[in-house]
Image (cartoon, rainbow, N blue to C red; front, side, top):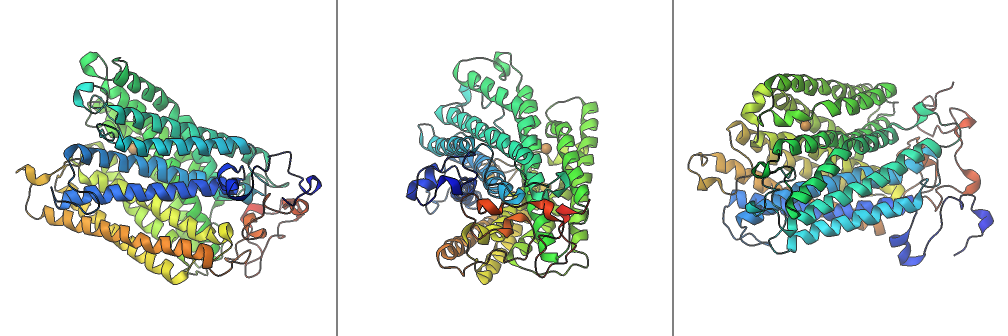
Length: 568
Ligand SMILES: [Cu+2]
């Protein structure tokens, strides 16, 4: 260890922990914790993707002996769809979009040497890792993984008579609860860091939009998760202690769970959407060489979306027997929330207008986000209208809509961010050509999976059915072919990720060396070396945005850019 205490002005903030290989496990450095979240999220994505492969194969070729898995039983089918959803949301989207990039980017983008609570940060990752181990282990206990869907609706999930409340279900609930604890701890850290650790001179409107988006998402998560935490404990008691909160057989109310779940579940969509929108906005400004059209618009609409998202949850209960007058109210709030999101997309498109656009790989991902998410947003209007939803409810239309919002957020948004900040994280460039092939294969395959599912849903095919050919009334001619198209595209999508993994790990060791600022961007993280040193900048060269608005303008960039630092 070659440092003296005098050289480290930030030593009061955190310890340096172990060195060598252990530093990657016990580090309190926000960059390493960010990478821990990223690698864990990538690993979990492989598991979630494998689950999708397995149940899509079952849907296309019911009862077949599936390579790498074998024959899928009905119980296993339920466990696979349940855990695919749970893992992709809680162990892929959340850790990668919020925790990995929040941890990595927030201190670097606001000019801090680390998070304010580095040990809390480490604890947050360790709890998250424990929850990930628990959800994986739950697949292998007697009775198998939980099969009550990621929404875990009672009475199926509450009454032991349905065989869905075994050890797998308990472990699933505990894993989700632990994951929430991890993100609560992380969220506290993000908020306090943004409040207290900004570079001198950085005011509210100087903060990069992506940092705002991650922090607003963290606040939204913290405010929405409470009722579900309480609900999860009550459901755990129903499963294990024989209480009757949610099971009508014991006097409970299953709809109560739906309220508690969706009070969290709908804001959760925005919890993952906002960071993705932040990455996209940031990438689009960099590669159009323009400042964000309407920085404050994006900021205020994000806040408006977050607030509105607390008043839309009952659109999930249009057919669950809520008062039809309430259905009207929730139809209106649901349609209203599309306005701020449309506004953000407009800002992004307006930023492109007359920009000097370079189609780098991160830019391709950012543009694909806009195109694909738009389809998700527009199909949401059908489902938000209570009349149409009575027909579409629980069909493949819902599933396709959901994936047209969630895939752009979790997968396209992640690839945009990874390809954008890879040079900063690892000091090397990714391969451009491989990146492009991977991009086109992934986006094309994605559309070939979910456009057929829109058609299936419109034809009235319900989701969560193990074998459609088993029911004569569901086995409509031609629809099976669409399932085979979707499954083939799933296999193509998953196989093309090999290209990404190869590009990622090959570039990690053999990629071309990255300069400090390869994209000619002008947020603060690009003013330090690639990768940044421990403490992010040399202690005597911490960023100070007082020094004038144009200090950070970089070569090739219009000098009036720096949107976060307009002259007073
Ligand atoms: Cu919703």
